[in-house]
Image 1 (cartoon, one colour):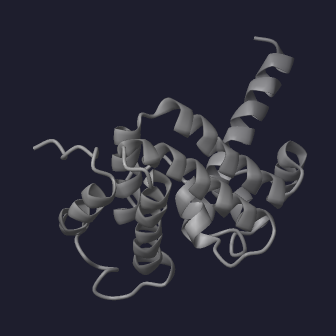
Image 2 (tube, rainbow, N blue to C red; image 1 turned 180 degrees about the vertical axis):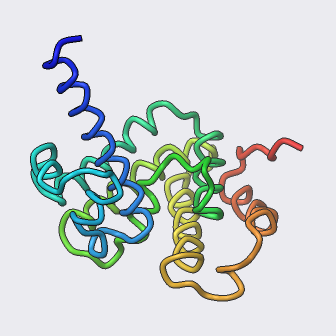
Length: 192
């Protein structure tokens, strides 16, 4: 392999490492509390490379947020709901793939890009979740469920509140699933 191809592959790997580190940190801390230095350190890269590949922290945040579009296109509503639900109830789970919702939860109250991202994330997720009911107010039902999930996400991570913060994720699933099924009646029961 030529030196140029090696360099190109390494730059792609470094860019991906920066993106992954940013997605994790935005989900853990939100936009405001995540620094370029933190992202670079987690990625094992130089801060200057973040600016080279993404331009600004805000542009990187936008790219993390728009990654959810590909996620939405690849998921059916049933699987998406389960993964979204599980990701918020157990945010440290290695199975959690979608960082956009947690990033938006952790970035609430931030002006500009993150506020627009939050609206975009909620709208995209509500549209997909709305397919899980035939009721005429499907959009409202989906937004109500997302509001509930946001609240749980806030009280489990951003502003920990007992007993929700330390409640067992499986117990929370059992308690919240009937509410979810009431709002979106096509939600399947979890496999036994």
